[in-house]
Amino acid sequence: MSIMSGTGLLDTSVDTGRTESATQRVYAQLRKQIIIGDIAPGEKLKVESLKKTLDSGASPIREALSLLTSDQLVERFDQRGFRAAPASVAHFNEILALRCQLDVIALDKSIAIGNNAWEERVVLANHRLNQVKPSNSDEYESRHKDFHMSLLDACESPILIRFCDQLYDLNIRYRYLAGKSLHYKKRDIAIEHQHIVDAVVARDADSASKQLRNHYVRTGEFLSGIFDSSPIGIASDDHQ
Image 1 (cartoon, rainbow, N blue to C red):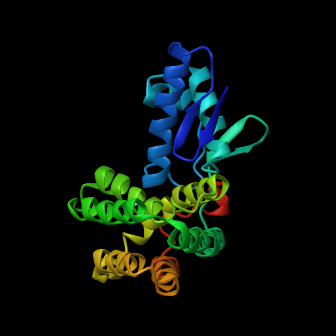
Image 2 (image 1 turned 90 degrees about the vertical axis):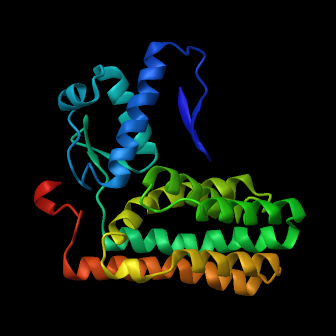
C-alpha cells in the first residue's frame, strides 16, 4: 500500500521489491509529464501504450495511475480507463481561491508563532531560489516549492500543511501554462518573492498576506489571459 504524504509519495509497504520500485519510477515519470504538459489535460492514458513509452509492465502502471488519481492529476473513466485530469479556468479558480485562503491562514500562523530559525529558513530558501534561473526548470521548480512551503511550515498544523502542499502541486500545471504567456515574462517574480520575505522578516502579517495573495492572483490573471486568447493545453469535450 502507498499513500501520499505532504512531501510526496510515502511508502508504507512491507514489501519493497521490484514492483514497488517500478511503481515509484512510473509514478514519478507520469507525474512530471502531466505537470509540465507533455501529457495534455484530458489525454487518455492507455496502459498498453504506456508499457512501451515507459518500458514497464502493466501492474506498476496501473498502480501509478491509481496514485495519481489520489493526487487529482489523473481521472478514472469507463470503469478501468484513465486520463490526465482536465484543466479549466473554473478548476484553476477553485485552486486559486483555496490557496489564497489556506496559504494565508498558514502564513499568518507562522508569522505569529514562528521562531528566528523559521525566519532564517524563509530567507535562505529565497536566496537559494534566486541562485537558479527559471530556465533550469527542474531545479527551479524544486526550490520554488521549497520557498513557498517554507513560508508556511511554522504554522504547527500538519493537516493544513498537507492541504497547502497538494494545492501547490495541483497549481503547477497551470503555472506552466501561464509561463507560456508573452506578458508573463514581464513580471519580476523575484521582486514579488522579496516583498513577501521583507514582510515576513518585519513580522507584518497583514502585508505578508497581501503580498502572497497578490502573487497568486497575478498568476491567475495571466492564465486567464491565455485562455481568453487561446485555450492552450485545455482538452475539449471531443478529447475527453
